[in-house]
View 1 (cartoon, one colour):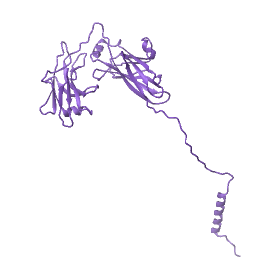
View 2: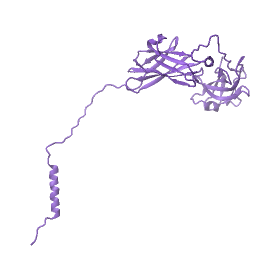
View 3: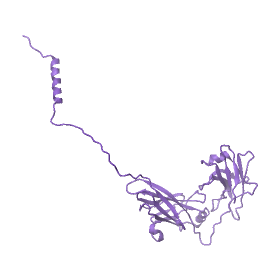
View 4: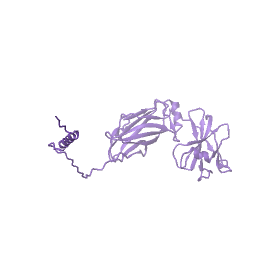
Length: 330
């Protein structure tokens, strides 16, 4: 007796057909996607650039005016304070020297508590100023900032040494955005520091070096690629011994600190030969016109050094490697 068997291929075909029917049969829900675009105008946004100015007040060297030129209010504070000498070089404030800052109406009241303070620890060139931000500084509504320096805790010897360097106080003033923003900027405020020395005492400042009388100074070498500078010096009675001489330069028109070009020992003549290569290699500047001075660095005493005036002009025209030198009229 024979038995009918369904071919395997036929069975598989039926299963595939059933699967297609199930997958293509609606389930009662419809899935669709729609999209649309529209153009909308939004208010203009303010960037994080802060316009902030710090200017001195005429007739009041220890006061400044803070001006906000931003399109929004800012907060402000003195951030750091330091000292520099007459040549713009950093000077460590003596231990115990205090700096107190007041703002607004407190400037007119010397007894009002200071909003920001700093006390020199000694041996530090820059000091952080302690105190919270003051706010707001509104656009085009200036605020006053004033500084008081106290020296009661500073020894007299340290004051005399500092006074001889004609110090200036440099304050970094910070302005920052209000709220949680992180925009900020800083400006520098520099004022001369007038020190009150103990009664009856005057600083003994050695006389500065002087250019030697013509025709000795200045002159250029015969090969035209070097300048020969000569100077004289009489420190006066009781002047400290000179440890070394330094020839220092800065670009003409600059008010920045001078840069050392050459050191001259005291065992040699008071003269220095400066080549064009030395001049240009020491000063990383686009300028090729420089003014030079001579510094007497002392071995001991309350005064660290004495500078001559910028007594010479040195010019290096083009790429010739030559120097033109001339004296600066006194």
